[in-house]
Image (tube, rainbow over all chains, first blue to last red):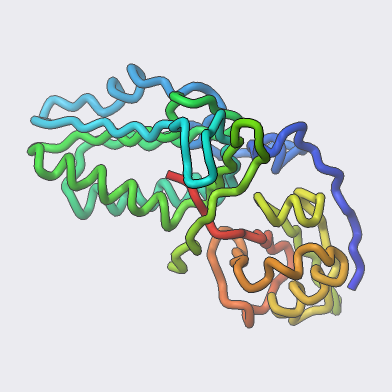
Amino acid sequence: MKNMVNEPDVTRNPVSTVKDLYPNGVTNLNIQRITSREIDIPSILKSIDDGGVGAKVLFLGTVRNFSDNGDVEGMTYESYVGMAEEKIKNIETDAKRTWGVKKISIVHRIGDLRVGENSVAIAVSTSHSKDAFAACQFILDKIKREVPIWKKEKIIHGETKWVEGKPLKQQ
Amino acid sequence: MLSTIHVNVLYFAGAKEATGVRMESMELPKNTAVKELLSNLSMMHPKIRDMLNIIQISVNYEVVDKGTILNEGDEVGILPPISGG
């Protein structure tokens, strides 16, 4: 077996961005579901507006200042962006089919985040409140099992440590 | 008829740290299975051997069994257990 090209690490930090993975360019990739920018809550809420909805639920996952390993000063998120985009799209389809969701927005942030910053946003609009809450929980559970994202804790006065994860659900 | 295929292998999280590499292109014999690729990768990158029992493999964005045969142009992901959301 021959190793033709051993690409040097094109990232300056342990973040997998579209540009890192596809340095020669990429087409047809919607990058909004995975972002390295601060999560834009007003835009997300606007995107789920629909005249027929009676309920909207917004969930935000936030970096907290402690973990089992000690006091946390930040978190780094990394993603297999292309695969993550596809899996999130599938989750949106599932949520619409299962809970009658009208509009949906799922955004996961990658890169270096400080304590208090939002790492993930899930926003849904539905006819009724019960479905909106259930859909949000359904989506969050699926993200945790189906979307290739990894997080690394930065412990105060300590080292960085990948959070123990769960195997990807084979589909 | 070519007797080799070319695949791209992408490493993530702890696997990227273990190999020091984000992506590498490989030329393999035709009909190479994922488990054979892993065997070769662990020879090239010894630090990844300790992770072999916990990593999963994706081919073109789908998690696959280790007996899966690779094809020309496949994109292989070396995926530690996930922790997003």
